[in-house]
Length: 581
Image (cartoon, rainbow, N blue to C red; front, side):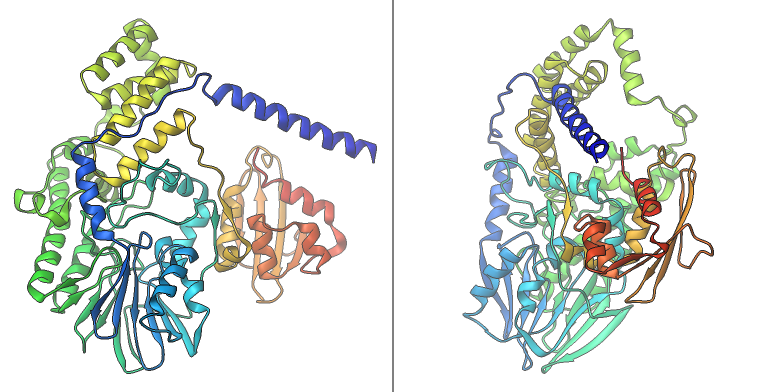
């Protein structure tokens, strides 16, 4: 008993020492003054855009309403004889609750159906509010690629969360975020991913519905996401495009991270929308658009902007140009660039160019010098030595700041910090350069990212840790938890280990096995003969264990997990292999 007590105390002591050392290395020694962004044209443009998101519920046509300005995404309500049909539910229960309360002045009918135009957080996480008061029959519709979104989120949850908070400026102090370009504010809590109401009906290409006297056609319309769908009401000639149209240059690549989007699919989906000749267009961001001519104009400008950038990149690649060359030179033609609804308030052309290039050709630019480039820290060391030390690099970085060459100043500061991570002046220059880069752009994603990293470096904000609630964990397909486990294997701890485990999911009959083989965890969907470990566990219990929302001891005490032959030490040995150092 004493031995275990000493071990526990030793671990606690190591953790305390580790935290102290971490803070001494990475916490700035001196207070850095950070001022609010200076006023200028970008702030004026964003303030003008913000006015479009005044909080309101707007009537589209008889029995169709859209709630605008409560959060990043809209909520659309279609009244029917059987109850309300909800298209998208915004990103949190707080915003959804405000909308539902205000909607009661228009309709207090129960919810008959929810339709998710796609699985991004700002469209699904308000759903519990609208599902509270259900009609006798209740369905939730989505395109069948809906759950692919969760596969990425589970695998890359930490990096997506970190970059997402920067992109949306989730931790920025008041005064930094004017608008998000396609909505007033992102209210999603990146620290605690909540539960949502799962789809009950998935479809592939299209699905015709008749609900309470309303005819709806759901069509697969890949674009911003692969699972994107549109909703068409042929009787009323009202079109709901999801996020395939909003009043800003489209986010053909998102800097929070994603696989390169198929932009060809996107403009072809817009062509499908144009063919419908809608009288009303109700996007999931910003206000509705009315009139066939205006809708045709906007959808055409939008699809032409996407195709123009795509085709320009492909032409340039065939001419042998590099990604950097194309990102620097490709612009929209004047008639598209000057259109007020294609301003780079949300998507950015240079980001899009790089993404299209990578989707077709990958990272290699065709120059043999770049086949195996030096790591940036080694390049920084070499350049520093070549110019005569960090003091001379600091002089150049100061000069770049004075001459308002903020990108060059940031790059020089980054190299200085690679060489000397404790350089206070290098840190100050990088902070100032990032703040100036943020001030200079009205692209809201880039602006928030610049400001967030500047304030992180200044010690003014911390992003915090990502957590997933037990309810949210239950929404994720169990396959993804086992797939994520394989990735979480600690290669050092398992370098000389060979151990196998079979997991029988008792309430669904599914079977998963993991074979750890010297640094690799192979996943199989079948039982392994003579496995070193056999675990019988309920699906939700395993999801909660894998998400860290419950402990093996608690699950065992409740009878939700059972280890055959009482191989508890083997279970501990196996689980320890997935603990990160």
